[in-house]
Image (cartoon, rainbow, N blue to C red; front, side, top):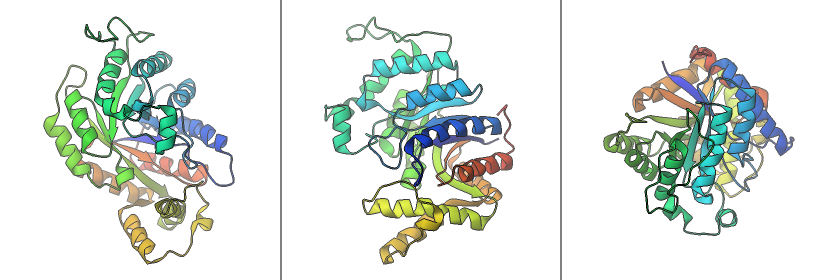
Length: 336
């Protein structure tokens, strides 16, 4: 049975305050748990007028207090901004709040522009140390001893407990796939960022070079895909206009809140029409059954047993309805 999970980015919508987007993420997490989704991940972006989820660890704590079963995770923590010990402490606290339900997804990208990234961490070369940071994080998260000679030897991330967070590697290129394989970590490919480009090669590298370990004896891979279902195909494509307009605007450097679908429609120039046609051709959009069929085919092609879905709509009700329709199509239950 294919597992379905969720990535929500707390997207700003025109006409509503940004703080409302954060509260909507909380509501959606509760709904997705009730519908039987496997995990619910939140992202980290900074100084981004469209994506206002800036602190996944804080949001996860709030979601943990409102849920009982669904796994919760970051997709992800942009590790070069932070000290691995502090991140490990934050996620060990989260695991104490929701034992055995916490995923710690980490990424190397800044989740922001260069100037904002430097304000978060003045070290311009911080990302060069990403592999070492991940190894340190792994040790502190799982409670493994730091080797002698390392400055962290004898230092532990508390609180300890019978469970610990699962560390995931996130990426959209071969780099993350190869590092995940080398470190023996589960790997999530950001399909929605690349529109699927590079995913086959990344998974081939990951599976061929995977180094088994006690915690993760086999490679585990998933993709985060953008999908939108509605009661009818026509309604789904109408709702899709909001994201399509956002993508076209972003390509020209205009980034803002998500527009209502009826306001998002505009005349596109010749090059934009080509880009729009390509976007529509690869989009997982349609009725619940149509999108479910597309997801199954994608999972079969990539040999996946889980898919993570991200959905942007201007209206929260339309976003929730999309997830509800897919839950019904896949017969999800709270025991999934």
